[in-house]
Amino acid sequence: MNAPLTSFTPNSLEAHWMPFTANKAFKADPRLVVKSEGVYGWDHKGGQVIDGSSGLFCVPAGHGRKLIADAVHEALMTNDYVAPFGLGHPTSFALAQKVANICPDGIDHVFFTNSGSESIDTALKICMAYHRARGDGQRTRFVSRERAYHGVNIGGVSLSGMVRNRETFSGVMPNVVAMRHTWLEENRFTKGQPKHGAELAEDLQRMVDTYGGSTIAACFVEPVAGSTGVLVPPKGYLDRLREICDANGILLVFDEVICGFGRLGTSFAAQAYNVTPDIMTMAKALTNGCQPMGAVAVNDDIYDTVVGGGPDGIELFHGYTYSGHPAACAAGLASQQIYEDEDLFKRAAEMSDYFLDAMWSLQELEIVTDIRGYGMMAGIDLAPNGPAGVRGGGFQQRLFWNGMHVKFTGDTGIVAPPFICEKSHIDEMTDKLRKSLLEEMST
Ligand SMILES: Cc1ncc(COP(=O)(O)O)c(C=O)c1O
Picture 1 (tube, rainbow, N blue to C red):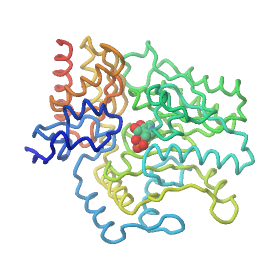
Picture 2 (tube, rainbow, N blue to C red; picture 1 turned 120 degrees about the vertical axis):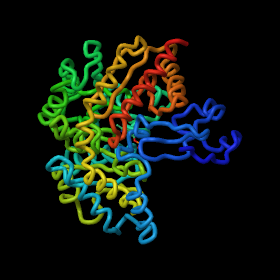
Picture 3 (tube, rainbow, N blue to C red; picture 1 turned 135 degrees about the vertical axis):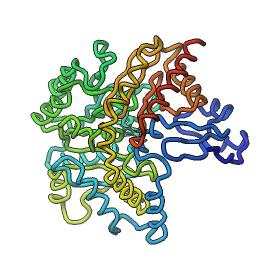
Picture 4 (tube, protein in one colour; picture 1 turned 60 degrees about the vertical axis):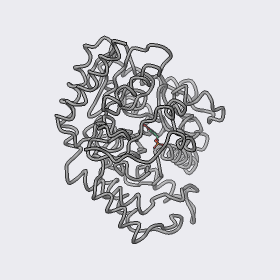
C-alpha cells in the first residue's frame, strides 16, 4: 500500500524544533511517517516501515484502531472539555476504576497527568505530601539509579541517570542520590531475569546507612530500565528493595511508564515480578498512544493519609488543566477495552518466547555485544564506532530506509513490537535487523 505524499518541502521543516532529535541532520534528510495502520507505517517516499518499537513503546494494539478514534470523536462532540479542578465528568472516574482494577491489590487510587514526565513529578510531590501529612516532613531525600530514565521535567531529570539528559541543566533538584544500575558483564546475553546482581539492591541499604533511613522519602526505579537499554532486574533484586523500604519507612515507586499495560506479559511489572510498590507511574500504552495521557496510581495508605487525613478543602495542591481530559479518558477506556477483548497482555506473554528467540538469533553477529530482554521488549547493544550514539544514530537511519523503525538510545536498539504482531511480523523484523546489521558490518 503506497502512502499519499504530503505536500512539504525541506525548507518548511525549520519552524518545528524537534524533541530529542538531531534537528540539522533530520532536516537535511527527513524521515516522515505519513500514515500508520496495524504494525506498519508508510514514509513520505511511499516505503513501508514495520514498527519495531510500538512507536515509543506506546502502541501495543497497533495503529489506526477505529474503536479508539470513534471514542475520541464522540467525546469531543458530546463533552469536549470539563474544567478538572472542582468539576468532574463520568469518563475519568470510569477510567480510574479500570486502571485500579488491573493494578496490584491495594493500589486503588489514580491521579491523571498528560505524560510520563508529569507522572514522575506528580509522584515526587505525592511522596512529599504523604510524609508531611504523617509528620515525617524531614524525609526530603530521594533515591534512584544510574542509567535511570524518568522523563524530562526537572524532578524526573533529577532522578535520571543519563548524563546527556542532565549535564546541560544546572537546575536539578538537590538531595537525590543514585544507586548503581544492574548491568553486569557476567549477565551478557541472559534471556529473562539475570542470575547475578541481586546484591546491587544493597546500595539502597548503603544510602540508609549513610544518610539515615528517616531522611529518605522514596526510592524510584523502573522495574525494567527501558530507555537505557532494557536492563532486566536480577532475580531477587526488586524483592530486596521492597524489604529495605519496608524496614525504613521509605516509599517504593515503580516507574511503569514503559512496562505498564502488558509489555512484560502482565498488566504491570509489579505482577510480573511479584513485588508491590506503593506508587506506580504510567503513561504510554494507557491510551495506545492515541492521546497524551499519564497516571499515578497510589495505595490506600497514601490516599487515605493525604486525602482522608487532610484538612477540609483541597488536599493536594497539584493538578493540570488537562488532567483527565475527556478525549484522553475516552481513548484510555477504548484502549483498555481492546486490551481486554483481544486478551492482548496474554498474547504478549505467549509471543514472548518466539520474539526473544528471534532477537537472540542475532547474537552470532560480531557487531552485537549484548542482548537483554523480557516479555515483548529486548535491548540490543551494538559495538560503538566512535562516541556513544554515533553508530546507533546511523544504524537507526539505515534500518528505517530498510523498512523498520526501532528506538535507539546511544548504541542500543530497543525492540518492542506491538502485541498484535503475528510470528511473520517478528520474522520480518528479525530479517530486516539482520540485513541492516550485516550492511553495517561491511561499511
Ligand atoms: C520509564 C519512563 N519514565 C518516564 C518517561 C517519560 O515519559 P514522557 O515521554 O511521556 O514524558 C519515559 C519515557 O520514555 C520512560 O520510559
